[in-house]
Amino acid sequence: MSQPKTVYRDLIAKILLIGSFVLLIAIVIYWMVCGDEPERLFSLLAPLISTWIGTLLAFYFGRESFEAASKSYNEIINKISPDILDDILVKQVMIDKFTMVSIDVTNPMITTFDLKALRDFLDSINKTRLPILEGGKIKCIVHKSTFSDELLKITPANTLSDFINANPIVVQFEVINETQKVEDARKLINEKNCKDLFVVDGNNLVVGWLTDTQIIRYMNSQNL
Image 1 (cartoon, rainbow, N blue to C red):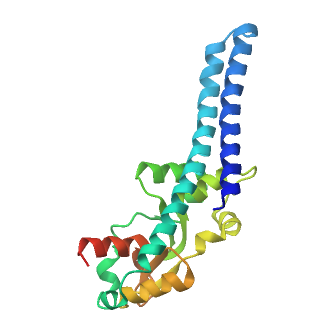
Image 2 (cartoon, rainbow, N blue to C red; image 1 turned 90 degrees about the vertical axis):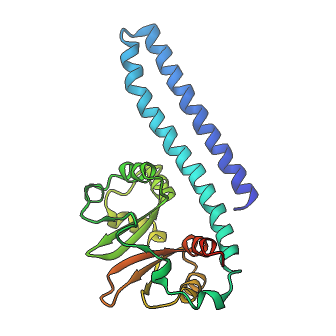
């Protein structure tokens, strides 16, 4: 991210945060002077404005952290020796389907397309990426910052289909067969410039998930 763009986003974040606090204080002061139930007004407005501030911060800081981490992972994974990775099967490294956190398109959070609930769900399990499956096959993979980004729009998407159309990045993933090697996975990640590979069986059903970071973690755990 360029320096001018970073400065611009810093300015927007500060203006919105300060504006939110000023608005809350101004409304409460007005009703304390002119109204008869200031406590009730405060209890109604405080959650609304705090939710807005939380959404803004999640978008701003989540996006910055994600971009910095992505750059670091790219540098590391490109330095890993192909000879080492060529001896390891992806199924030895992948996150097993029964271990990975994912949801199906039939989940109520998807059928009602509750963006805030989806983002809060990731917060609650301390995860940043959420695979969404359909009939056992991968539909899309969404980063928490993308949910936050969508929430800040004037008219957020209200269906999964609309969300995907507005955010094509969520379908930027690849699939790899469970019998292939981790070196094949590394090449695919580099060639397609993606972060997520979904490991499939002969019927193209998801049996696992392999990320750029997972490869690095495996190497570290094996002292390779």
